[in-house]
Picture (cartoon, helix red, strand yellow):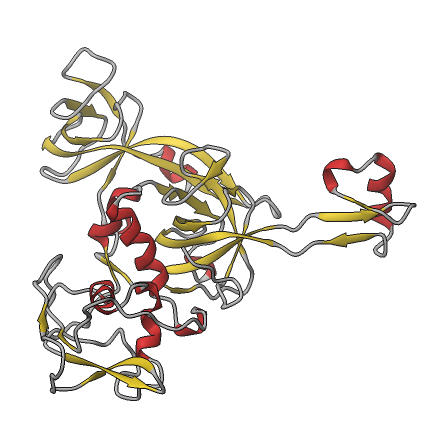
Length: 374
C-alpha cells in the first residue's frame, strides 16, 4: 500500500468524534515535541502525525479540554502545548514552550487565509481516487447537445482533437463530454433515481455556431459521436476540503452500484448510494457498511442449518415459524465517505474494509461499536 493511500485511510477515520474511538491508551510518537505552531496549509492530519503513532486517534488529544471545545476551529498562528491529565496526553493552546525542542512545520498543501480554520482533509490527497461522474434526470440528459463527428476521420477522439456539436455553444465555455451509463432505480419502491453520466473527456468551445467546435483538453477514455456535452458547472465540481462527520439519516442507505460495475468493491473504490440531497446526505458524510446477517433455520433434529445448506422444507419452515428461524447479527464490512451528492443518489469512497463490499450492503451512521482499526 503506497504512502498516499495510507494517509487517506487514516485521515478519514481520524476525523470522527472521539465517541467513535476505542479506549486504548494513546501512544505518542518517539521524539514528539511539547509545542507546535499551526501553519498555513496544515490539516488536522498534519498536526496529528506530529504527536501520535496512531493519528486517527487525534480527537482524544482534545478530550477533557475546555480551551479547545471544537478542534476544527484551530487557526494558523495558534500555538499548541502538550500536557498530561491523569497520565493521558492532551493538547491546549498555550504560549509556553519547555522541555523538548520547539517544532516549526513547513507549510504544505493549499494555503488558507489566516481567518479560516484548519481543514480536516485536503481534496488533493484523495482526488486521484475519485470520479467525476454525474447522476442526472434521464429525460433531461437525452435532450442535451451531443457530438456529431470530429475533424479527424477517426471514430474515436482524444486530447487535442476538435469535435462538432449540434448546438450553439458559448465561446470559450468549458464542457464535459459524458457517455450514457446505467439507469438507477430504488430497489424497494421502483422509483427512478437517475441516469448515470460517465465523464469521458473535457474541452473548450473554440468556435460557436449552429454546429459548434470543441477542442478536447483532457481525456479519460475515448470520445465518440453521440456522447452528450454538459457545462462544467459548480454541481459537477467538488469542495476543496472535506470535513468528515457521521451520517445522520432517518432511514439507512444502501450501496446502489459500484462505479466500476464489478460485483465487489474494496478499499479506495467508489460506489453509488441510493440516497442524496433529498434525504439529507452531504459531502463528508461517513457511513459504516454492513451485510445482512445470515438466517439460520433449526431443523427437526434441533440442529442449525445455514442458508446455503437449506432444503425446500427448511425454507418453508423459515417462512412460517419465527421460532425455528433465527437471524444472525449484521456483519461489519467497512466504512465509506461521501464526496459528491445529487438529488437522489450520492458517490462515496470506501476508506476501510474488513470484507468486500457489494450492492445492497446497508449503510448506517457509525458508532463506537462499529468502529474498528485500519
